[in-house]
Length: 141
Image (cartoon, rainbow, N blue to C red; front, side, top):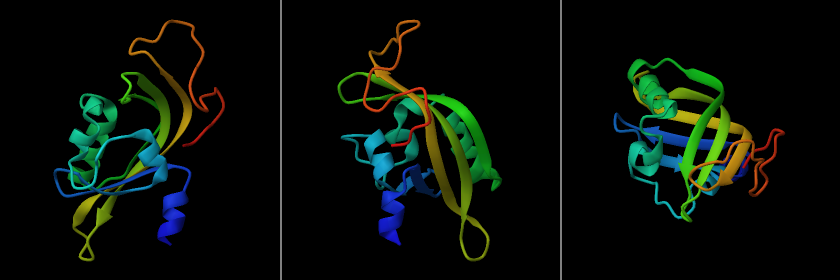
């Protein structure tokens, strides 16, 4: 079962507690954060560049309320180790992770990307994607 989760071609992140401490993720997520240590760290530290972006607020809201959230084509900017910025547009769902008694243990986030772009921190206008498998068609990690 764990092998299947590891190979799932979507971004998958599991966070626990009010600080949203990262307790699990798969290979697709690892590809999104090369060189970052994540396990045991709050999500806001692992993806510091998402603070102030909509995704972080959604993870916190799902933990706070227990109400699942979903979105389509939400844009995020992820800093890469070489100083470039990975821009992605994601379709996602975030669901509460529950204890057996029904209380909220954490959140589970899953996303697939529909468009990506990698490049300098400032993307020139009208420039096409230039990295990896970035295309205008649906792609996943």
